[in-house]
Length: 76
Image (cartoon, rainbow, N blue to C red):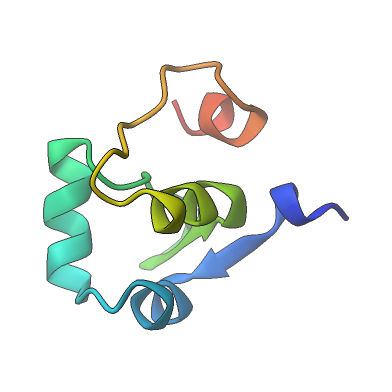
């Protein structure tokens, strides 16, 4: 499995970004943070490649257009 296809849970994302769950969801709604992927029930995860892209440039992150990558296309 490639690094791009890895999914990471919310708990790890909060540690990687130093953001709270509430802040992450506010930024998702604003389009300034990657969208989560539902794992069923109340569990969500994020594509590692999306989080890495956000960490590299948090102020310049924009939600990619549908179809820009495989995981984004699957979520829409």
